[in-house]
Length: 169
Image 1 (tube, rainbow, N blue to C red):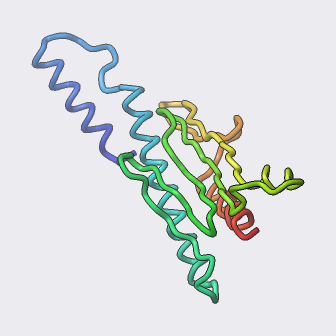
Image 2 (cartoon, one colour; image 1 turned 180 degrees about the horizontal axis):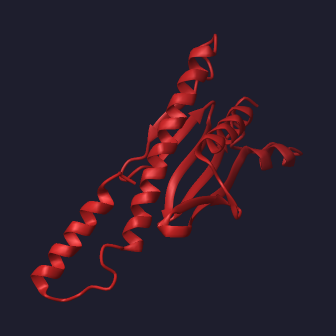
Image 3 (cartoon, helix red, strand yellow; image 1 turned 135 degrees about the vertical axis):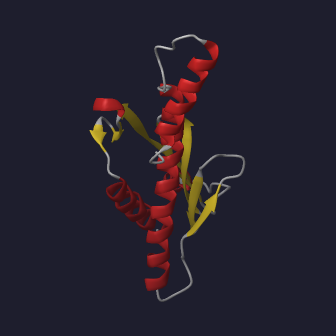
């Protein structure tokens, strides 16, 4: 959250109370708005960290082949995608307080050959992880995965490592 945005909201709420003459008991605290803004902010921070980590990976890689590309997704606030060797990892705002992380690979075996059931199953992979926001003490937003607190730097390390391993197959 922007450092003074909550103060701006308090000033705005107070002005509205003074103008209307009505006392608003939720004065300056709109949980839905906070959750949406925090989710977008977290996605933007994730993207920034992935750009930094991917840039380092690409610079250290001796070959231009298999470099990681990051794309923003059109008509979204902060969604983005990692792309490498036909493999995609998509980060998107699923709902306020929920970030979806999906993996997708579409291989070259579009027409399955007889007796190749195992490769056909591995051709299109779609898995989804959900990172959720939980309310902590004093209105703090705590990001969690499967009920456990999740820190940004460790998420980036985990998902980038997984992405590189899966996309190098």
